[in-house]
Length: 525
Image (cartoon, rainbow, N blue to C red; front, top):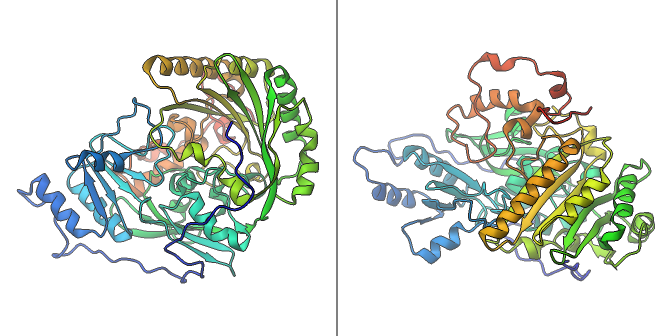
């Protein structure tokens, strides 16, 4: 397993933005259609002439498939290198601001190019790229951050990584819920829901968003908040990139301890039943502090040698954290206890050594577990023991503040679920090993269907829209019809625009409870 880094804070990279308070209203570009605006669809304009005209109209850079192969391969690189993902975009556009985003949308529409929005390129299922379309990349240049200490809020551009935001907020002992991987892009993370270590105590990323600045499919630049375009604000908090390109987010901040207690704790497989039962009991104990963030993993040292691990942290005083976590950590003999006092900044990025390497093949499937369902210990152990060497089983727990929000309050629907189950095959090198991984994941997900049902989290899985958006799908379709009636933004877990008022039909009881029920699966309140 990857060891935790030293507790000393790593050197912080410099940022193009200061930590001073943002202006009340950041300046907005005004790009009206006019005689001076480039006409990318002019009669007789060739593709070569159109791209040359486009390059001259923006401040950012364009890398095309026809350019130097090394430059092109570097520009299109994404985290998941699974060869089943077709990563052959025609153009990659590294935009520098909102004006560039608007011009890029106009160019893509004029030349009938499919557009994929990319921030960190970490889409587990390859939704950060496309085949012979255009990649609108926010992540190279749009990474400015501004902290408002008085209002305890942070404004940041849509290309920021998690660690970019942390680098500006943590010096003030402030943070927000932003995932658990420092290299991950905030754009996809937040618009998909946004798990993180603070979720139990402070809610998901979408629960902490105050406002967004969005470029819509028709090239308009709008604010989305509770008071401005509230329907768009609701949809972009869980509906992914279906409704527009989020150029910036404003999120609330809360107090964050400088030093916490946490780390990985490893156990031999023979003790897995005790560890799983203790984990389930501990996370469901109402006395367990919400400052605790807890996940369970399998580790494969080889195809034959497996281990089970807890990732546990207490987001507070490390002395109290050690005391609070001791009953869980001591549930079975420990092989390696890496839990210790560590800065929050270091804990937030301890898995980055894995996630910073782009192009490694991986295969994922993920499902949600409704609250109150007893974990099937024997089935989970079978899943772990039958995994190939590349296989990883993950059981993440999210409850507390997450489940206090109604399923329809934001577009993220899975409020009545308590765990996220993920099956991963990471680092396979040939078709045979990939097939072994896929067969294991098929078997594992089938075995645990009665536990999970068929609900899935958009940031982890390529589930159907019904599985991904559940009770909120019909409203999302109506909002899609308003903001993107032609389905211009389709490289995502796609929501088709509603066709007519028939989409206002009432949902069944299970859907009203936020759980998608399909034949052969189970719904729980």
